[in-house]
Length: 336
Image 1 (tube, one colour):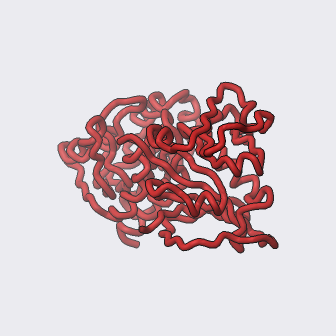
Image 2 (image 1 turned 90 degrees about the horizontal axis):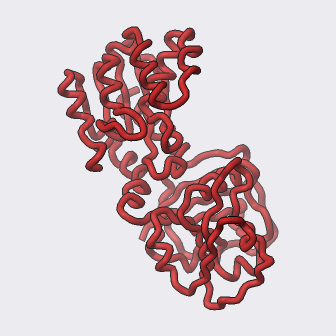
Image 3 (image 1 turned 45 degrees about the horizontal axis):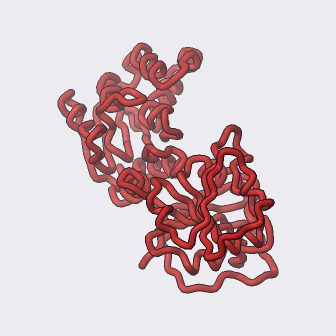
């Protein structure tokens, strides 16, 4: 079990929350005791909530001292949790190692700087997959080095950079992806395909996107709602219906969602002016997908359907797999 093994565990944990941290990056952190025991492996889960390093520190401290569980439960936010960690660590993590998929932040934003947290708790070494190049957050390695903490950068860098692609893209203007649900034999039509857990995950992502794009034929045929009803308090996204025909039956459920803007257009340019955009559709939409969209989310069910399957030439790279009960999610990238 080498550095790559531990870093891959941290990166895999971060993938569980890919997109769900918008507008923040997905980040994972694993903590190894000075004796080589894995104490925790956690991730940043949602913007405004504790970063991966703080989550991992809290989990590790609770493992080493179960009495701290009651202490940390009193925290109302990330700032209070951070303060409690500094007040109650009792040098339990002195000499530990941290494996972080992104350079720990050095600034105080909605949450305090993670580099300072690792410094104050006496970590001996911090292994970092890739540097943070953003102006407001970079510099964590320097903070650690100045405090005498050894650092190493570049372990599993390619995987970490791939994990961060959406974050860098939406930070620079736009990240767009395509979501599709398929049966085991490649059918994308004929009613609900994915299970409840998969659809709940889709709704969680929908609640964060700036815009949802769907084809006019799909709207007329499926009469979708395209809301976030499976999660409590989710924001329903605005919708762009991509169609040459501007007239639609407004009794289709998607038109009746409160506080939603619906755009009907034969151009997709409005989509690429938004920061975080989700394209949804079936085989025809995938076959005619705009070349600027490189990422695919494929929810694959455990069923076969007696219907026409998708037929097209497309080469993809599977970056990560996740399971939702008996369904599978494939995070993919289109290869030109």
